[in-house]
Structures are given as structure tokens and as C-alpha cells.
Amino acid sequence: MAQVVLGGLGKLYPDGTRAVTDLSLEIVDGEFLVLVGPSGCGKTTALRMVAGLEDISEGTLRIGERVVNRVPARDRDVAMVFQSYALYPHLSVRDNIGFGLSLRKVPKDQIREKVDRVAEILGLREHLDRKPRNLSGGQRQRVAMGRAIIREPQAFLMDEPLSNLDAKLRVQMRAEIARIQRDLGVTTIYVTHDQTEAMTLGDRVAVMKRGELQQVAPPQELYDHPANLFVAGFIGSPAMNLLHGDLIEGSDGAGGLRLEIGGQTLALPDEVLETRPGLRGYVGRQVIVGVRPEDMEDAALVRAEGASLLESTTDLVEAMGSDVLVHFAVDSAQVVTEDTKELARDAGADVLAAPETARTNVVARFSPRTRVRVGDRVTVHVDTARLHYFDPGTGVSIWEPAATQRRKDES
Image (cartoon, rainbow, N blue to C red; front, side, top):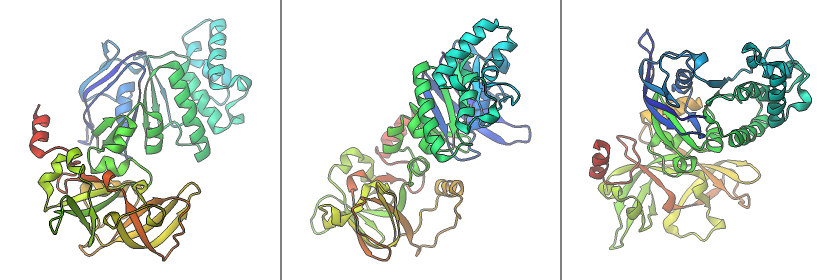
């Protein structure tokens, strides 16, 4: 086991394509770090640089006590698990798992002992004499992991290992991978496009966009305190709703702040300026507001004040069993920034410059007790204490006053 330190890693291809820019991460001994982001964001390239399968253009890579920029892949003492299982079809499970040790001329009795131990960890003992063609997808993936585990490397590198499995198997294998990594305590870097995998597996999650690191933090911190619009929109399913809003002072002598969204007004709690003092600088200005689906509820099911309600008409209702996803629209122009365009491209949606008169679709996660149906007039209670706010120009989350943030950035 070892610490892995990426110090300003960059990858520039001969044709001028830049895949990774100034990537700095410190993965501590035994940590499970997940790299996540849209297709083409550079996460796999970063992993391949750690593995030694891609040359490093800039920066320093340290594994344990060694700088390994020029060390061949075979000598880095890391084991990689790929998206494809890459098993030898003519070999048994036992021989596939022990293949690397056989190449190293390890004595057969030691190989058998180690294979038996790894097979016990992976629940493969009864399959050791089978060929890969006689295994399920999940079993094949466990064999591929066994081949990595048996080497007892300093670090595991996993590149979308579950993407070839169906949804049910992915959930099962997520739990298996988490258990195995926890039991072995091996430093692990895991690449995925699936943010649900990232949130459920990682001790920390690093979000990338276009080769640049956007934020690295424990999963719940990413969810509760996204650094910018991109992270906010990428983490969470269904995705955070993003709306234009105007921040205004309370009228008619009333204190506090109000948020106008598409001609409707929400009262903000007094503590919002305590937790986000930077909002003071946006009073009288437009901000981008983020609302998570689970922070909205059918007002008929809660004791809701008029100051925290939105009115609309239901466009779609999706009954999920444990909850109900309710789709409606508000009279607010769509948020169109470089970040939201990137998120839309990743989701396969059309990226359009929305006219000022456009409406924005919103998704709310209601209790299954709701009686709302398609076409109904719906009153939505918004938990205004849990709203997120972003600068319309930079996309950065608004927390501290701008001057304070500048001093932190400069330091």
C-alpha cells in the first residue's frame, strides 16, 4: 500500500490536443478516490498516466516514496482493472487469477495457496475450474479483480470496471468492490462516468471537466457544497434544477431577503446571510439559483407558508415507488452557460441559446402520498434554507464576500 501524489500532471498529445491540465491530487494510503466526469473529460487519461500507459507531459507523479514519471508500467507496482475483463478464454478461473504469478516463476504451491485465498475473498472458490465462457458478467469481473488482488500491489487502478454489467449487477458489484477495498485497505483510484457509483464508492470524489479538476471532496460535501455550477449539475440524480432569480430586499418594511423566480417570490430565511454572507453583494442583482428535487414537496402534504411556495401545472408524473418525480415549468429563461452546455452535451440533450421568454423545466421529488396528476395545478413547497446560489458570470458558488474569496485564492 502506498500514497499516490499527482503534482500538476498534464497531458499534451503531439497533435496539440490537451487532455489533462495541471491535475494535482494526493491520494492517501488506503484511500478510495473516484475520478468522475463526462466522457472526454480526461479522467481515463489521468488514470493511464498513473498506470504508465500514457507518457506524462508535465508535472510529477509519486507512488510511495518514488517519483515514477520515467518508470515503466511493469515496474510501478500498481494493478489495473479495465472495462473489458481481458480474461484468457482457454484458461480456467484458477489459471487466469494466477497467470501473473506464473509469469514471475512463483512456485506452484505458493500460487495455489494465494489463488485459494483470493478466491475466498471474491466468492469464487466453486468456480475455480470453470472457463470464463461459463461465468456471468459479474463473476468475470471478479476474476479480473482477483488477477489484480493476487499481485498485492501498492495501488489498484480501476477504469469503469462495471460499465459492461446490467443495472442490477452493477449495484451488486459496487457493494462487492467497496467491501473488498475496505477489507484489503489498498489505495485505489477508480474512474467512472456514473456519478451514483462515484458517490457510493469513494472516500473522496474528484470531479473533472475538460481536463481540469473542478472539486475534490467527500461525497456528501460535494453534494451539499458544490464549488460551481458544473459540479452542482453533475452530482445528484435527478440533477439539480438551475433557475434565474433576482435577489431583492423585503418590501413594505419587512426584513430579510426575497427571491423572485419567474414572477413568483420566495422569502429567504434570516440565516441565509449568516451561512452565505457573500449574497449581500448580490442584493438587487440576478443570481443563478439551484434547487435539488428532494428540497421540494407537494404543499398539500406539509405545513407550508405562502412565502415558500411555487405555483405551476404538472407536465409529467413518474411514480418511482419510494417517491414520485413531478415535472413542471416556471416562467424563467433557461440557464445557458458553458457549464450548463457541457452538462447538456453529456446528457445528450440539445444545447440551445434560450430566449428570454422561455420557460424552464423543473423536477421535484414528492412523497408517494401525493395525489398530483398530469395536468393538475400544483403548489410546490420549496425548502428555501437549502437553496444554492451561483454567480451568473463565473458560475462559482456564492458563499463568502468576493474580497474574502480573492484573498483566499491569492494565498
